[in-house]
Structures are given as C-alpha cells and as structure tokens.
Image (cartoon, rainbow, N blue to C red):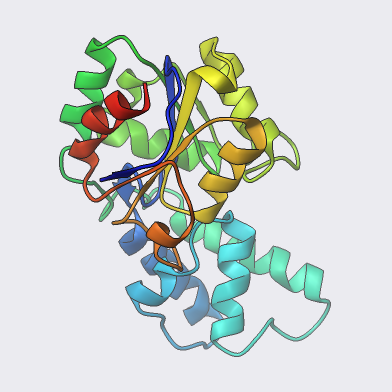
Length: 231
C-alpha cells in the first residue's frame, strides 16, 4: 500500500469490473460467442482483460479490431450490430464465471458497519451491473449503483458520472474517495475533485503504480487501513 495525500472521507464510490468482481471470464465467453457468429478466432481471457474499462461499445470494437477489424459495410452500423450481438450473448450469463475478489463481501460489510455511504460507478450497463451485484448479494452494501447507460452519453471519465453517484448518497467530491483499477477511475476522480485509490489486481493496461493515484492497494482487504491514511 502506497499513499500520497489525505482528505476527509464520508463516502466511497467503487468501480465494478476489476475492482469488486473478476468478470473477465464471462465477458470473454460472450465476446467469443459473438466473434464465432462472424467466423472470427477466439480471444484469450488475458486479451479481453486488456479491453475492459471503457464500456461495452469500446470492448466490442477492440475485440473486432484484434480479430480482423470491423465487419464489412457501414462502420457505425456494423459496430452497433456487433454490440447488439454481444449484449444478447452476455445477458443472462454475466454471473456464471464471474466472482467477487477475495475479501470483497467481508470488507464491504466492515466499511458499511463503520458508517461509510457507498456507491458503484461503472461503465458497465445498468442491467448487468445489478444482476452481478444481486447474484453475489453485494447490492445490500450500496446506497446507489450507476451503470454506464444511466446518464445518456455520460460515463467515466466524465466527472458528471461520479458526481451523480455522489449526489445519490448525499456526499460531495471532497468527502469521497473513488476506488478502481483503471485510468478512467483516476481520471474521473481527478476531474470531480476526489482522491483515488487504485487496485493492482484489476484490468489496467499499464501498472497502476505508474498512474499517480493517491493510494494503491494490492488486495481489497487493505482498503479499510488505506482509508485511515487518507482521512
């Protein structure tokens, strides 16, 4: 754990994929079923991990680019059709292989007992977000959860996404910390005016230790002690 600065913390906002849950196996399976429909080769789970974090359209676009480019025809229409195919393949299968990271339920319970207001702010669609939280009985810990399609055209790193999550729990950016695994999580925190804690075990395409977060944790269970150094 490495800390740089401090602030008063009343609320915690979490990313989902790569922070609370390891969802890459289910995302990989759905991506590969979508690719199979157009005769493309499968992608490894490690390849898919490097594509996660910017929402479904970007995930699908990266998968297509990695396997031969967008299908023939109008690029926008082709991508939209592929996104729709992926959504069909992912729906109902988003919690089959997905699992919370070690210590997540126990640590969330500890943070809730300590009195923190908590929310989820993710670029994942809202329906899939809630299905995953409910599948692992995690939704009970959160006052709010805002997926990437809740605010039309607004998602991380746009600060409006994080600020909306904070509004839902009655906190200001100065009273909150963003916990994630991706540059978008750091960027949205910086833009909103909140400190950021990044997790080394997630899906970042570059080492999070190089991104300049206020703190870095190697395991989710480290978060309560990390927050004490920020408070």
